[in-house]
Amino acid sequence: LKAVFILFITCTLNMAACSQQEAADPVPLVTDYVLPVGLSTVAVQKTHYTTSAPLLFVHLHCNETTAAAVAQTISAKKGLPVVQVKNGNERLIPFRLAADAYRFDPNRMFSDNGIRNNLALYNKTSDAAFSAVKAFRDSVLALLDTGKILVALHNNTNEHFSIVSYQGGEMPVHINSQHDPDDFFLTNDEEIFNRLRDLNFNVVLEEASKVEDDGSLSLYCSRQNIRYVNVEAEHGHMQEQMQMVEALLQLLL
Ligand SMILES: [Zn+2]
Image 1 (cartoon, rainbow, N blue to C red):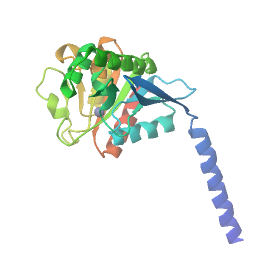
Image 2 (cartoon, rainbow, N blue to C red):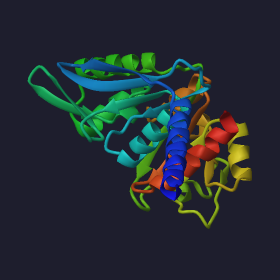
Image 3 (cartoon, rainbow, N blue to C red):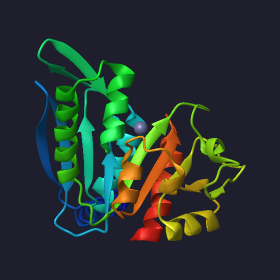
């Protein structure tokens, strides 16, 4: 009788877990795009859901694998859309044009100046290369739902780029000395900044007029009046980045 009772309990728990899982997991609609850049192509994946959500995750740097895992996990759990550049684990996107090889940073393509400077940084510049990157940029922008809050996820390397970079600058910044300075939010939205500051997260309010136009998505959003949040965490800080995104979702959903 005891064995039967234990079996019954186990089955009930399994069934509960099963039905909970079914109720909790929204069904993703995944579209794989192959976008041309010059003579090459780049895979970009968009996952969306039938339910509407006020935000869209964006993952641009394919080598930032912690951020990719956080985006995928939370997107699947909460049914939130995500656009990801699937560039074979590389930060820079390589492409060919005639006999020449080029590469560029996908987070430096969102302004014409940004594209020109980035091409000059990694290659020689050419009008054809500029046009190729610009066309790719426009294809990516077409996949972003700019009526929503764009939430970018990035990873940085320990102590190279952190909230401390903004300390003593012209833009409002809040630092929690108990948190790793590599784990921080950057937003162009004052209300989101205030609420994250009140929750005692590392956060900086980016004011486009005070930053040089580097072609980043954040500055593009500021110019276009799109609400933008970057959740930046050190490589490998999966738990920290997950908690940061969860906290942000509590404010936005
Ligand atoms: Zn990045």
